[in-house]
Image 1 (cartoon, protein in one colour):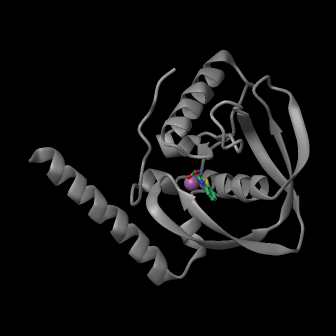
Image 2 (cartoon, protein in one colour; image 1 turned 30 degrees about the horizontal axis):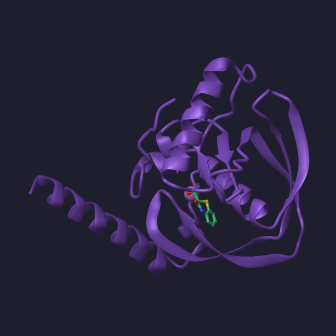
Length: 176
Ligand code: GNR
Ligand code: NI
């Protein structure tokens, strides 16, 4: 397993639409998912889409357990949202690709999802609560959409400038 670099805005790779995995869940794909999970835990975050480490494939990992002792990793290959309910609710979101930026996004409170799991079995289930928020955030990544794309243009520009500035400062510190 290996920790990979997480891409941050304004990296254009994050805008790419990811393509479906073909040929099912292979050992090679599981190795990639293991790396994604390790990268996510290290960050730390509760979800990660493959595009965030520069791999434009429709793969997501997640762990909502918030506990290092009782880890509960979830893996999603070729996930689809089949249905959403009409009711929406705001949740304060963050993103590992937009460090230190948080804002409220309105999303449907429940969604029905279908995906292949780590063993390649097809799963269909309703997601709700934080699970629903996170899977919709990650599914957006597969379409090249970030949570700041749901905000006003001003807020989006401010967010990108904040990350750019932090990167400039970090590179200066390293050079000095
Ligand atoms: O770690 C993360 N936390 C989070 C909080 C609220 C809503 C969504 C998320 S996902 C994020 C990790 C990430 O960037 N996944 O793409
Ligand atoms: Ni994200």
